[in-house]
Length: 265
Image 1 (cartoon, rainbow, N blue to C red):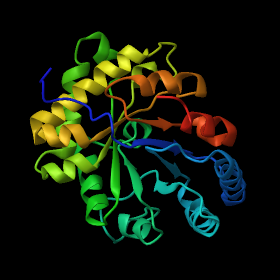
Image 2: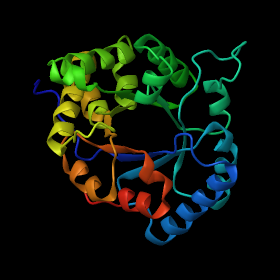
Image 3: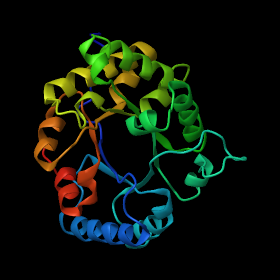
Image 4: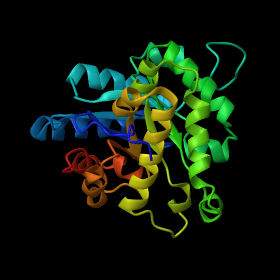
């Protein structure tokens, strides 16, 4: 591990709720109102940022609620198309998302790589589109069980980071978010420990250091995403190289999500 791959302990932690294909716009409105009520009471801890990522059909509803009620969360999207416009039926462009004041867009989530055939090249193109529109990508990387068992996990994840971020300025690379998803531990019966997560997040930071230097490695935020719960959140955030969480199912329950947001680092 390069000595340059050092996490900045003062970096703002980003906790992101990925709602996936859940919550129609009525349900989304109720959920964001519940979040607003709880966060008005408890607040978002200093040094912590929150983003929520509803389905496309709920983005405008959630945007209006967040802005009207001054909910202390950033609006996020779950994906986008890599082209700005064109004959792409059913797709949504990064430009369309930017017009809704979306701040963060997930790129290359494991479910889209698996179920929609998204390649590393396509993920890179999506990152390009997101950055051009002034939003921040949350670039998802991770290995499957076979890669982990065969000793290919680290080179695979390093290659994903390289393919998504190479050729960009150190400032740009340092501003993105990278989410590590241990695909091998999601729905397989296997378990990813805090040590497993920390080890791979350190590898990711090391790859960023090699790619863009120690400054970018210190400022890039690396999330962990893999069945995060209120019970596991604090331990994960205690790890040196984990500075955020990408939360799935638990983000659909306002009380559980707020518990994760407030988990002690």
